[in-house]
Length: 421
Image (cartoon, rainbow, N blue to C red; front, side, top):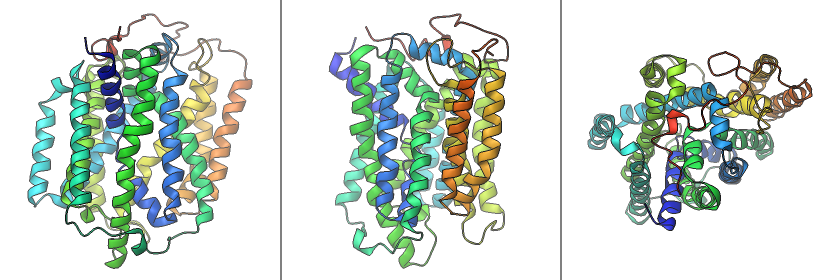
C-alpha cells in the first residue's frame, strides 16, 4: 500500500491531469483574444475552486457512490461527450501537424494509447498521471526557457470585444464549473478511492496547485498565440503552438481520452446504455467526423473559422446542458432528493431549449450580455424544480423505477476506485 503522502499527491496528479482538457488548454487563448488578460481570472477562479469544491460536497462516506448510482446515464454521456470533444481537438492538432515530424509522433502516441489501457486501470492510473504531469512541467520549462521567440503581454492587440462582456461570461463559468465536476467519472473515482481528509486534501492540491499550474501555462502561451496571430493578420490557430506545447497538449488529451474511454468500455453505466464499446466508438467517431467536417466544409461564418465554431458548439454541453442537469435534476445531493424524475427531466429539457438561443447569441454572435438571460433561465428552472412535490417515482439509468441504490460497490469503479484504507 502506498504511503499516505504519495497517495494524496498521486491522486491530486490524477485529478489535475484528468481535468486538463482542450477547454483549459485552449479556451483561455480565445478569451484573451476577445476580452484581454482579465478574462483569464474569470475563467480560472471558478474552474479551480469549483472543481475543488466537488471533493467537499461528496466527502460524506458513500455520497460519491450514491451519486454515481443515481445518475449513471448522465455520467456516461458526460464521458462520451468529453471523449468526443478531446478527439475532435486532437484530430485537429494532427491535421495541422500531420505532415511534420511532431505530427507523426502524435500519431504514434495515439496508436500507443490504444494498446496502453492497462496503464489507465487501478493503481497504475495514478502513477501514469504523475508521469504525465511531470512530463508537462518539463515541456513547459523547455518552452519557457528555450529559444522560441515568445511574445509578451506588451505585444497583445487590444481586445476584440468590450470588457463589459466579461460579466455574462463569468455567470456561465460559475454555473458550468460548479456543476460539471459532479458528472465527471474521474472525479467520482478519486472521491471513492480516497476517503476522508486525505481525499479532500487531494482535491485541494490537485485543483488549487497542480491543475492551476497547467492552466497558468495556457495563460502564457495564449499571450504568445494571440500576439503572433494578430501580427500575421491571421485567425488564432493551433499552428502557432511551439513544439513543446504540441507535445504537452497531445499528451494531456490522450490521458483524458483514455480514462474516459476506459470508463465507457468497462463501466456498467455504458453497458446499460447499450453495448459496452458502443458509446466509446460513437464518441471517437463523433470527434473524428466533426474535425473532418470543420476542415472540408466551406466557411460557415464570416467572422469565425469552422474550427472555432465547432469548438464553441462542443462547449455548449459544459456551459448549458450538463450544468442544467446537475442544477435542475441532481441537486441537492442528499438521498431521495437529487433523483431523476419525469417532471424534473421535462423542466430541464424546457430550460435548455429556452436558454439555447441566449447562449448562441452570447457565444456565437458574441453578444455576451445575452448570457445573463440564458443562465437566469436555468437558475429559475432549478428553483421551480425544487418547488415540486417530492419524488414519487424516480427513474433509474435505464428508465425503470428505482428508489434506493441496489449495490453499495458498483462494478464500474470496483477496479479503478478501490477505497484507500
